[in-house]
Length: 92
Image (tube, rainbow, N blue to C red; front, top):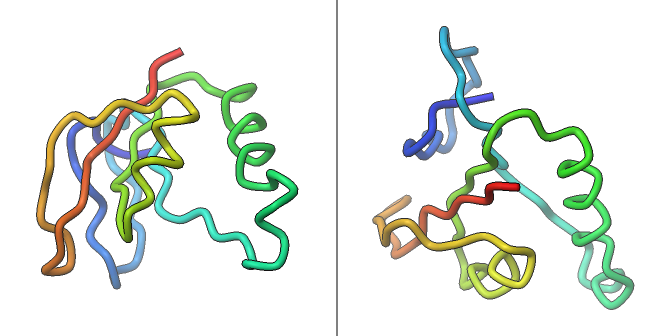
């Protein structure tokens, strides 16, 4: 759980926030040799089943196309770790 509109700082320990209002996906990694069997999509589908808040993430390394296919929308382009990234949200 995290704060809607905010990207979680990278390379820091997670500290719970007082009033979370979104689920923040920090990372979703699938080994390259398994990417053809839709494991990422299956993992995200499970997250949706448990969803109580909007889901947010920061799309890096050109991953915004993957997330867009799952229903995420770009809210803003940002700089993250000195690189271009996209803050994206998903609302059921």
